[in-house]
Image (cartoon, rainbow, N blue to C red; front, side, top):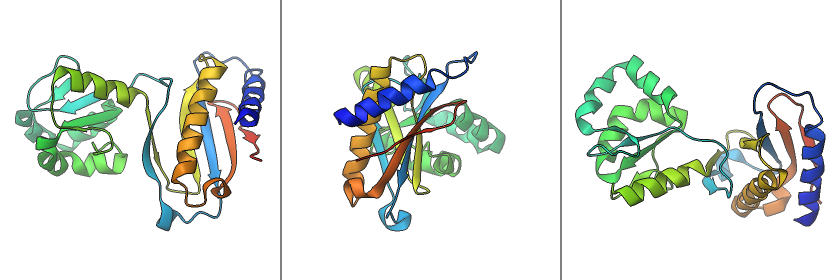
Length: 210
């Protein structure tokens, strides 16, 4: 991992030499796979990274209102039978959580929009048994530090940090994701062709794995 860290450090130094932009560019990580059958070995995992990438807007489907999160209660569900309102809701939030007791109703009312957008609350992250203050706060924190990986092609592309973050924090996030992906691949390192990192407006820099 020391060698990989060094390569990543050099790549980030190179990327920072690029033209200054008027916004805080996102750092993207691309993991190119090989000898990997997407149909047989599809990945669908949440990875918790040590350093928060960005603030996520979270909405909760809860039995009653909660001061820490924008809430939609069961009484309000019926207004989202309007397709435009539903579409607007899905666009407005990055992530949704739900009380387990409401999940059947959530699936019926919101599933057709949340499912395809990959925002449906899941047992991995997002479905909670108790909607007490402590659980809600902990879940929101977890959501802020989590990355969802779902393979649709033999290449995984995910935001891993911001240009304004320290290199060490970006590298820490990359290594956490890399190790988690390795564990979930059938042939481990053999399934990874190479890594690439880039900023929003730059070309990717290849990282060869030895």
